[in-house]
Length: 504
Image (cartoon, rainbow, N blue to C red; front, side, top):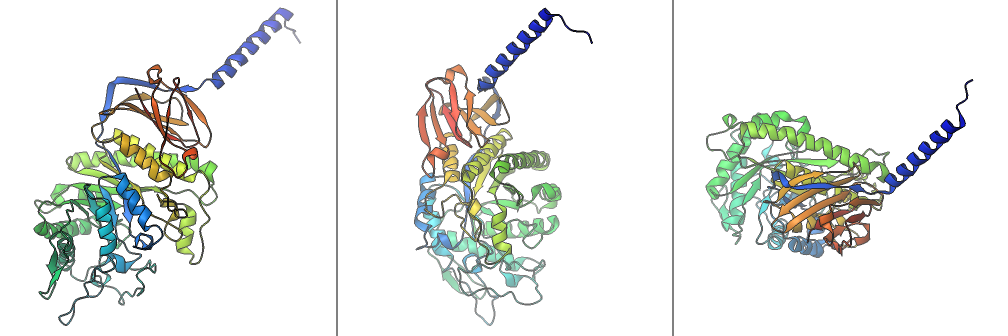
């Protein structure tokens, strides 16, 4: 075997040692983000907001009522979506029995108080109402649908049937016209000519027509489009200025035919309003995963959803470019939540430490990436959840009644970003940290998200020295974003931190 001369061996050792020193130095050097403020990639149209789903904890006197509506009022968001829905029929359906023998069953006693509190909390801001649950008696079913007398008892099997008993859809369209009249015109006249007075004269700028239509009654594109046209025509007779949100799909990636058919004006009645479409996304880890897995799963699934958004946008632009988009349910549903619903009596394990910050970080990431695509509204789901009612989607701490980090991330975004911002070219340094620069009326700002369950450092452009940093992180807990001032241009990030760097 040939031996290398000693001087060659010495040179190789020196080269290896020098290389290791350089590697060690590079390993400790923080990643650097680069911003080209002169290159605008998108003018933002994106409003961050949330949805409020009706459940017993939002009733007057309930543990979470006061703090939740106080938080909603303090947030001051627009396009807030309000959804009374199927698990609580008496809180979602105003006419629970079919008219008969000159009598009707109209009853708003379990509906109005919560809606009144919602409208007061959002006064001065736009809202989207969605009474998504059609009275069960309007559907053909093998036997009448029965439901609990207790308005607070959950019932998951109310939406039975796939065929309306009135094929003309006149019956159901008049139901929705009366709902709108109740809340905007002071009352309505029922099926037998009796006048019902409400005293309500709310301004309702948007109404969403049904919810997750591929699941609730299993609508086809043709049936839903006809329903939409019929119902909106009836409601526009009550308020010609109201605008509508359509589809609210649960699985948009699996139903391109819904977008292809609905967004084509040729498939609608002449003059049918195509104001907004909406659809949803929830990250959903597998049962064997934990927080260390979720930090990858959530963002990977968010990227998959964003790819769906890109495809839907191409369909929308091709058929109806003036139609806007509302991604009005964004969040995470943990497998423990599903177990509670499918296994009565099972109590979900509490969410692990760090989960709420991770979920908030994912929403901030979707908001920023969707803003690059010109998406109009992004709604975090949802204000109040708790054990038995999808606890992992809550924006309120259901134990302490304080807003949790998911709420504070939304507040952070709402206070710093919105329509009219200019998103400028930003070069992200790694897959662990996400950054996007915005030029707005507030000045130059940089949104930074730590996607990982570990501390990170990010080198900012030198002109960021002295900037103010507002942040939501494990150290802020269930409290408002903290503020600090940068002494140099290196930003230290806590696990799953969401930060806004506001330049001087």
